[in-house]
Length: 235
Ligand code: IPE
Ligand code: IPE
Ligand code: MG
Image 1 (cartoon, rainbow, N blue to C red):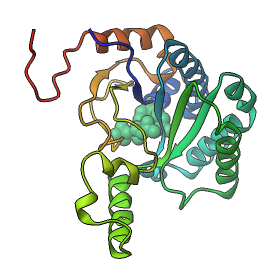
Image 2 (image 1 turned 60 degrees about the vertical axis):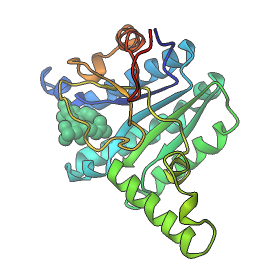
Image 3 (image 1 turned 90 degrees about the vertical axis):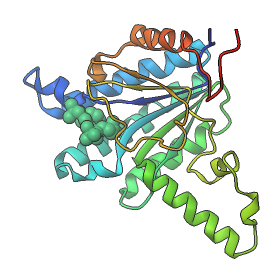
Image 4 (image 1 turned 180 degrees about the vertical axis):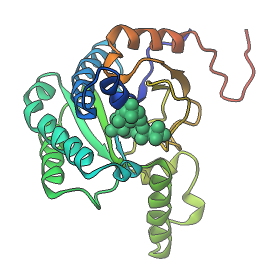
């Protein structure tokens, strides 16, 4: 039996459908999803999860209407500015993964502010994937590596599976448990490098309905997995 996962990733999907099925605007689902994330982050931390990575906005989500994108960005700013005190009290360190290009200045400022103010917190790292794509992360890491090799900072022999992590947006351990809510069974370009041996839990619940007890179920699923990492079970 495994212990509590060290690093959990959540693809927080289904906000729009949650709202539409209630006759509400998609934005109402995003707002409700924000509340769920708050509850889950605190619950995960209390269970002893050290890293929580959440997919808040993908590079491809820019394909949505301007109204929806702007609503999401405003909501993110609201959370970064208004939940800061709580995040600090809970000793959670906030970091971001993703590309900075295409993000509004007020979003970048709010991101910088919460990163700076939580940088010394130690209980849990909340990695918010914003304007994030897994392929983009691997491409961006490869560009950094090529640059360092060209400048003579590293030699190509220095590169291996483990050292590659230093070139990703954040140098975090690999994912142990990946959760996707909202019925779909796909990865939608999330943390492709880090999920190499993640156990994957799909939930039919829309993200706003995925509550701490559902996180407990996902963790229970994980605990019962026989993680072989390509080896053979010995007992
Ligand atoms: C996930 O919910 C949140 C974001 C992608 C920002 P969706 O907005 O994708 O909701 P559905 O999948 O359309 O229901
Ligand atoms: C993935 O959900 C992105 C986030 C949860 C932020 P999407 O709704 O964008 O993914 P697809 O389009 O269903 O694959
Ligand atoms: Mg979706």
